Image 1 (tube, one colour):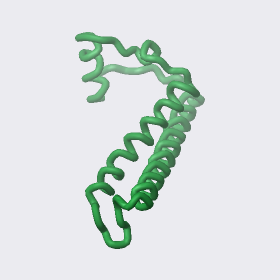
Image 2 (cartoon, one colour; image 1 turned 30 degrees about the vertical axis):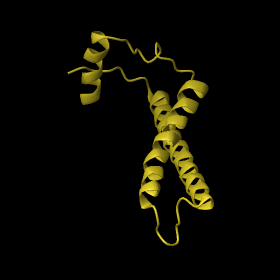
Image 3 (cartoon, one colour; image 1 turned 120 degrees about the vertical axis):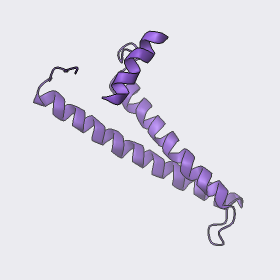
Image 4 (spheres, helix red, strand yellow; image 1 turned 90 degrees about the vertical axis):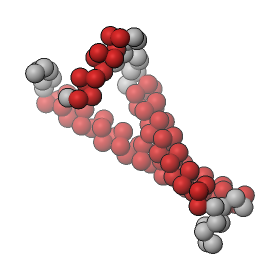
Length: 107
């Protein structure tokens, strides 16, 4: 079993705060993207919300909006605010990266 050092309560609460901020920002971006896309689609006549036409397009918007929202949240928080880079996150290419990735996903 791998034991990771505890960085103290300040680090713990900082990590919890960033996780909550990421959740709120990602959900906000997702909702904004979803509402904006649906309004654009309805205005252009592709989707009729009142009569329920073209529900496949609405499902596509519903699937893509969270991906775009949380992608933008990841970029804005991780890259712009915290200044994280691939080297900071210890991402390596090749077999070494895959060997380290699997235990990290399972733990």
